Image (tube, rainbow, N blue to C red):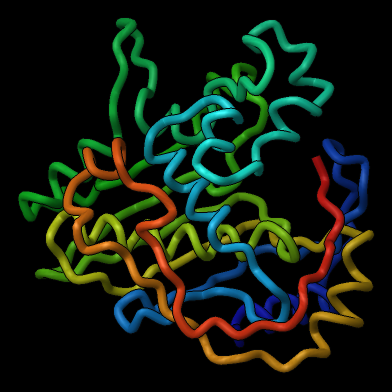
Length: 283
């Protein structure tokens, strides 16, 4: 919580106003933010100065792991986070690549599990990483990236959290995640949860101890219509201690994550929080 609140305060005190073309709104913006999550200590980075809906974040992560491309598939897992971008984005609705209601196109997990190759075949980046790590191999390129500029026009949204780089030192697994853009009041806690959980899951299914997850954000911002709620409400609250994330120990493979795992296989213990804050969401 301390590093999250420090970033929010830094944006308010030192940020510059930037007009965002996609949303038509102004953002108070800083460049470069580095956060760390102690997965080894199970200090789950769940925001406590407002209620945070961790289940939706983990459901979204499961959808990415499975390579889903439909908002309906994400809803079935337990999250509506892709409904607006799939169905209310004017540019995407007019895009000839859109296949119909709920279609997200070739975004996020599609790229991670089925990167298109010139010969018409696809590359499963995540499986390569999991296979290598399961054999104790780190080739300094254990990377899953969703960022494919050649297919930006084939999806409803460019990836914000775009690359996950795993590193194996002895029997301990680390993760460095890169994010080009972050809506700090709304999106960051989703991203924190997902970075933490991704390292915890991959360590578990590859037989390693989790270490630290490093999270680098390039453009961190607060939208103008979120500013007063952050400055005058959330930052006035005292945080509670970090809770713990409990993952079903029966999850032992990538196939498990692809087939039978649900939100019932995750539990958060010791979560205390202040009341929810209804921040505006920008499509």
